[in-house]
Image (cartoon, rainbow, N blue to C red; front, side, top):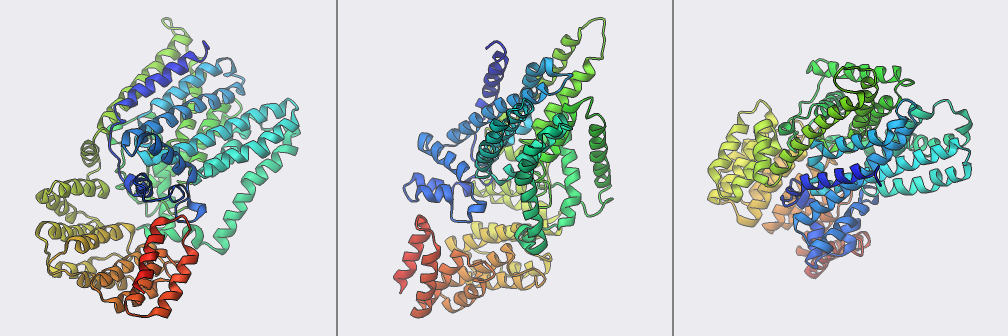
Length: 628
């Protein structure tokens, strides 16, 4: 109990620091992700809709959504209950960081004597780091937290199994590695798919602490072959024979695969700098202004970042035998980013991607200072006192920085204000401030923000500002100049991205719900089609493109021009991958024109596709049936 008392006090301190932020609002895409959950709370959705969703099981996160369902059942839909749940998971992850660090340090001959104390310091740095605020107080990121929880549990299981294997307990080891470990990883994958990195983290620890123990190969080769080799072969097969399955999402972004691979080393170096020298005011959600690398020297920091990562990796390899924990911590950081900082078409930069990898940095940092500090001699302080002073100072810096961020996260207004101060070119920060202005009917501020974006050097920012100025005019005056719509086409970039799609959706929703004078639904629909026709090199199956065309079809249906809405919806059925909403609109348009046989065939197709528990889409299908 005496050994664990510092850990208990650390958990209480962490909870106290975060407590003030639990009353903060839902943020960013929380509302969109919790749509089904909020409907369930009102009795308008089934629990299956919440937990399983209506998409592919491969992309679902049922464990995370089940935890949100439990949160709602216990505490309602108030943000406090969601963030309290996140804090509880954060503390549980902190305990596992300590457990994994202690196990790992026990395998380090030079640090084993102080394994528990060093593990507590590593856990303290991890729990109290201000970079974690944007995970803990961002409700939907519980998915990332639960994934981390299960990955840490899997790694801890591996370390236990590895020690037992070294002691000759082969049968018990096999049970842990081939039964318990896969179950834990599956739970992680059903929380968030980046839990797939768990076997890679185990390989890092194997190379750090157990390399050269040939007697263990009979168990370890099948383990790593099944858990790491087989998925790697499957991924390579997809890249070779069906690359769109993994890379098709690049059609949604304004950057290429090559640009992403060039940019990520800079992102990793920036993450590392934030972890070692926390600049809490510059942290936050609004990092979409992170510059894209278009070449090794564009910007020059691209090449510098690649060389820095290679140099640190080479140094870690060079000291592996003398400092295995430094090696382990560094490569745990890199391996922890293997999914979200690799080749997949994801946004360039997010703080919460460091939630798990940061544990590796803290472990390496503690081990490095412990080994360097052991060689330092002073006439004033003993080695132990020097270590306590250094750890205590850094821990206090982290705690105060985290408390400062927590206070900012109490209100959406302060989150946005700080984001704009340190990321003035962030589209999300500007748009969130603009939305706050619209909610307050402060149209002058909304216009100022959009005028600011019109002066941006980025042509995409200027286009988005044009779209949102039209929306602002619709909301303020219930009217807008149709000529402003015509000016969008010349400003369009080579492809429509999710940013244009979102702004156009806001405009379409506004004209449908409130009207916009001279800009009728049909007029807007025609302009949307002009925009999609102006991107001939973008695949019709690109989600932002077909979704924009779907908006046009829906607008035509709102104006009862069912012939045009049918023709558009029919043309989208294949490119959208047989999207349910497209099918419903197609059947509705056919029914409204009296095309009973065609509508009935589509209804039967949808009836066989829509999941039995999806009450929302079942209600929409029933409405289409009633139109017959």
